Image (tube, rainbow, N blue to C red; front, top):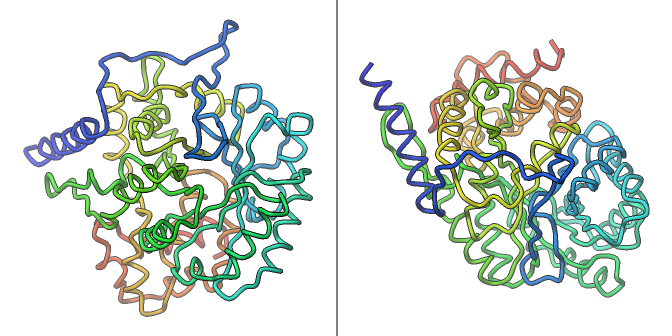
Length: 412
C-alpha cells in the first residue's frame, strides 16, 4: 500500500510541477466552446511563426483519411489547418491527399495545407519535384502552404543540399510557400539543431506531449520513472519559437487510448481535451495536429480550442492515463531497444505498428506500416535473448510487445 501511495503522489507531483512550469492551473472544469446551436468549433486562430499563415490552433491530421465529407465537417467546425503526406494512409498511398483535395474544393483559399515527403539522403531534386507535383495533383491545388521533409531521424537527410536546392526552386516557382521538417525519432534533436543553426526552416512539426517532454521527466518514485532521453528538445522548441520558426506539436495524445479514459471523464472535460490544454499551455508551441477519424473525434477535439490553462480535473485525467498505459507505451525519441537488438529489428517502429492496431484500432493502417519494415518482428518470435527488454529504461516488456504484433495483424 505504501508503494502505491508513493506512486500516486509521484504522478501527481509530476503533473503539477509540469503545469506550474508551463502556466497557470485553473480550478474550473468547463465544457466545450460552442456556437449558438451548441456545435463546438475552433475558438483560436494563431500566426504560424513569422510566416504570413494564420491557422486554427487545432489542425486535422489525416493519417487514415479517405472520406472527403469528414474534411468538410472539420472545415465547418472552423479547422483551417490540414496536415497530410504523400504516403497517407500507408495501405493506400495518396488517398488522404485525394480526400483533402475533394473535401476542400471551393474553399482552398480559406485553408492552409501541409504535406510531406520522406526526402532521402542521396535523392536528387528532380525526385523531390516529382513527389511534390504528384501531391499537388492529388490535392487539386497549385501550391502547398507548408511542405515538410517527413519523419526526419538522420542528420544526413537534412544535410542533403539537393533537398534545399529543390526547396528554393519550388518556392521560386510558387509550388510551395514554406518548408521545414517533421520528426519524433531519437536523433530529432540533432536534426533540429542543424536546421536551426543554418536557418533552413520556416516550420517544424515534432512529437510533444504531457508524458514526453524531458522537462517533466523527474524520478519521483521507483514506480513512476521518467528518463530524459531528449533533454535538448524543450530548449530547441524555445529557440525555434524565438527565431520565428512555426512550431506544431503532434503525438499529443501519447498513444490515444481514448476508450480507456471514458470512465474517468466528467463535467464536460475529456482526456483528449486535457492533453491538448497541456500542450497549449506551452508558449513555445503555436498549434497542434491530431488524427481525426470521425465526426465525433472532430467535435471532441475542437472543443479544446482556445483553452490554454491546465485545470485540476486535467491533472487527474492525465494521471490516470499514465497509470493505466505506462507499461505498454513506447516513448518517441528513445530507440535504446533498437540499438540493443542483435538482429537489427526496428523495435520502435514495430511498436508503432502495435499502437496503430491495438490503441488506434486501425489494423489496416498497421498492416500498411508493417509491410514497410522488411522482416518486421519475425526475428522476435524465436528470440531467446531479449536484449531489447533489458535495454528499455521504462521497464517495458519489449519482447512480449513485439511478439504480439504479428498476431494482432493475423500474420501467424
